[in-house]
Amino acid sequence: MKRITVGLIGFGNVGSGVVRILRERKGMLTEKIGSSIDVKSICDIDLSSKRGVSVDKGVLTRNARDVLDDPQIDIIVELIGGIHPAKEFILEALKKGKHVVTANKALLAQYGKEVFAQARDCNKNIYFEASVGAGIPIIKSLREGLVANKFNSIFGIVNGTSNYVLSQMSEHNCSFTDALRDAKIKGFAEKDPTFDVEGIDSAHKLVLLSYLCFGKFVDMEDVYREGISSVSLADINYAKELGLAIKLLAVAKREQDSLEVRVHPTLLRHSHLLASVHGVNNAIYVSSDLAGNLLFYGPGAGQLCAASAVVSDLIDLTQDIKAGMFRPTLHTIQDSAIKRLRKIDEFESRYYIRFTALDKPGVLARVSGVLARFGISIASVTQKERHKAKSVPIVMVIHEAKEKNLRTALGIIDRLNIIKEKSVAIRIEDFEPPQ
Image 1 (cartoon, rainbow, N blue to C red):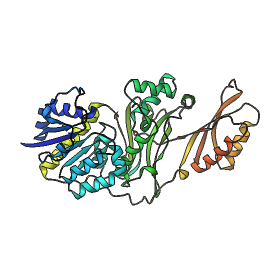
Image 2 (image 1 turned 60 degrees about the horizontal axis):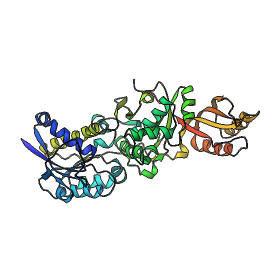
Image 3 (image 1 turned 90 degrees about the vertical axis):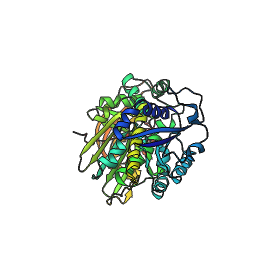
Image 4 (image 1 turned 60 degrees about the vertical axis):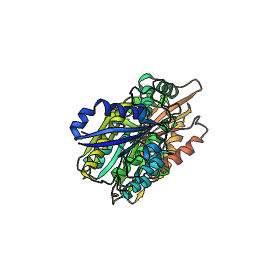
């Protein structure tokens, strides 16, 4: 029986979960794959904190070189996160002839081209299932299960923190600040939640998903991004009245010869399956030409579900090593129909718009007049009850309009003396759910 040895760099929450699974299910895994997977060395700066799993002290080290330089180690698992020194550790591991497993979406989104090229040059594999959707097997499904398909679009709720915050606001009628505070107390949000609530984490994951679907590695600066920190409880409640729910969506969509790659708050019909994804759960909707419309759903965070994905990668690599097989990590061919990235000004969508205006005759006429000048057609309009300051919310849904035209029109409207606050505009997506 072949014995595969693993070196783990990063013994935090997920790393300790990996060790726990490999230990508690060693017999089952060995029987299933016909090989033994053993953790030979574990590196972490902090070796004193309790992890809920015991390991021999001789396995532990604070020096990554003890892991990287060990010729007996077949696979390096990198779970420290961040860019540096994770990037250097991964590149060094590949150069030393070791395969790599990582969950580091930020690193792969920014330096994936370099890392994957190094893996190909060294004839080594790098797997990264846990980088998107935790335990949801979306990477493997796109790379292998749907390999014969061409993709039309991918829509994902891929950040559990943001989804939890929006769910709390909707279900408990609380503000963004209160919902985020609750997420921190329950351990669903970091002390500094910027990457989550401002859509950066979702953008990292979208770069990887769009490459797998469309073969184009998009630079992070080319991903249009808006977070949820400006989403108000008022807009969540007004949207409910319209039969809509707000979600932070990561979207990659082919439009004729161009590709849209964007992350922003989005309104969905309550009847859509993605609208019913609550709490820290993730869901990824994929539209393909052969398999049709598919939805991948499950917990988007958590020790054991993320560790499950890492172990899955270890199993795949073990089988590769036994077979003496090298599978290029991302030998993805760009969709020939895609010639360019679509700029934000070119996007077209339906929109929910909220104006805060003086309650006086002629206000609607002035607002709708500006919209009409830019070819923007109103589908519905509702004027809410008067506030103490004698200003009222006016909620509109407009027909499909080009982003550039809408933003120009709103800029003009916001300068009118009848408008008391900056207008709010949220895109509406009307794609079909999987049947």
